[in-house]
Length: 549
Image 1 (tube, helix red, strand yellow):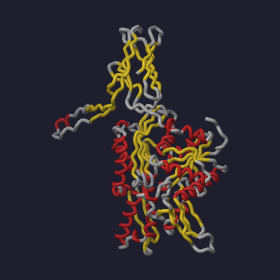
Image 2 (cartoon, rainbow, N blue to C red):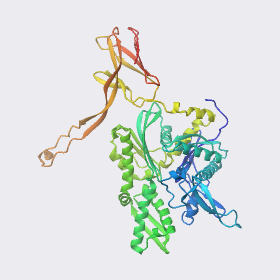
Image 3 (tube, rainbow, N blue to C red):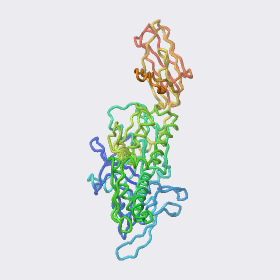
Image 4 (cartoon, rainbow, N blue to C red):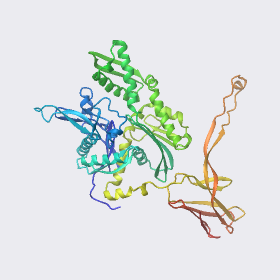
């Protein structure tokens, strides 16, 4: 890959439906940048009033008094034909309209203070361009240099048309995309970047965003990631949790005052804004208060809520999030005990109850990594995607765009993988040498010991994965427990993944090898999955054998 001076400053972008973040790697350290208002989480919102266009936090403030002129949740609508939009989340802002087959939004603007207000249409692609342009300007203000490009993350479910539309919007914003990477890959890059040693493992990446949730099961082998399964719900996220608080507090207000604040759009928007803050407080504290001046008909509102009551009220969406994780694991043909690590990312994952739900699904040996877990995250859960995008930006930033594009050809990034383990019998037990999901081509070198009688016969098998279930030994009862009439508890079942030899692939026979001598066994599989096995005595005494299957 040829190096280039074309891209000198490359940033990472996490472009979410509700919030976006900017990251940059300087001197080997990736940080999330703050915009000119000091925000690291920048609302993905545009709002129009008179001849002014507001963005970010300022635009979010317009949702209370100028909702119909505010454009939100446009990320997932970019590149989608209007007739394919069966669901959107623009319930508290300008609604999507059909603009020559594209998704757009009608807003009222003025060219200047003297002119009359007129209707203007902003397409989802134009809104994305304006938003990305503002992010680029914020990055340049922070870094003090011109930004030449970015690496941006997208959900796994993004279509090719959406990816192309996003790339076109970024070019229009003066922020060409060097590479698009999937959200789970960005999350894992952020974690791998902070780890000194990479180990093979199976990871569940659960990304709970504002209004969509996506769970991916990823196998990491030799530093390569393979997505085994993905499950997503386009109507599940932090907004569902906010809805719970809105309904709860609205009911409390109506009980005291006989007025339903949700019947007035402005009152509902004010209450929703407060509930977003209360939800965040409950992620870090066991109690939170909610206060809104003049919520409805001039009446102020003040209430308190503890975390337990919130978790009970939000049981339905929280359980759906847990079920989505279980669905992804099942879709990958795995059991919970096969998972080495669970990573909870996205703003909604900060809810502590989600961590405890994961602890109920997965065994103790599975590490749960979240904001509130024993195994903490190295970054804020809301910033993992941005950090991972920034890490990737630092890796590809000094190469030609054409070389980056060619390196992303399907023949390169969609590598074939083993579908079943390959190994040998040693000491009466099957030993896996190459596990399922290992990317091809691959090579494995191991050392085996010849029998004490001399000579060596090494059969090489393809195996099938199975589950071994054993009963845990019950703890001995003390005298009081032994005399008790209470029924004994059922012994705990212990499950473990095993590989059982199924198909003989090849045999290695070295009759003249010395007793107890060491043999180097080399297994090679090409991109087609063809196996070549080579064995040679390490002491040089005896024949070398080579064969293929």
